[in-house]
Length: 199
Image (tube, rainbow, N blue to C red; front, side, top):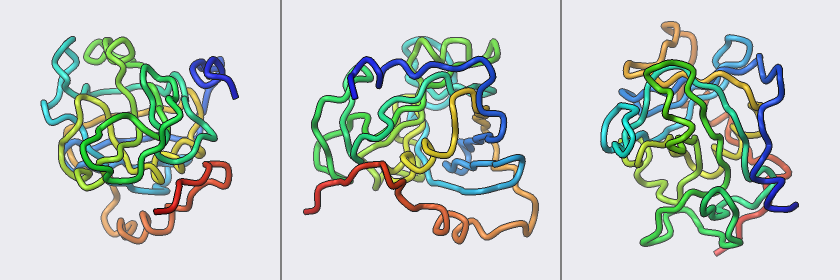
């Protein structure tokens, strides 16, 4: 697969109408809805610089977005990206001293005035090797996930899928689901995600 193909899987005219992603800054969790029903919850990290959309702020913007581009499909877990291109390097989870973007990139385009800079700022949902930091704000504006989680998520959602980043808790109906069971039941690695090197 060429780098050009990885770089430019752009949005088709219709897009994914079956999935919605909701990210809670308060809870540091990501909820995947399929046809309006909760399917999976994943731990994430939003920005350690707070919320906002100002250039140079490194903050996570709020509001409604769509997935404009998917990058890295089919690459091995832990694949490192520089300027959205794979470098060929593969990092294991919690590799010391490194904090690059890894595994997959879901590039977000803001749909409201409060997040109009998101695409230009390079706000992504992406994998991180720093998995120990998930569950608390730690990023430079993006939404970070475990490599296995972002690979699974990227397989499920298509370009054009709706994304909402909210300050408050996730909108889950009371008693509807056990979040821990939902996460555990939905974290299988896609068959074509590639293999990460064993230690």
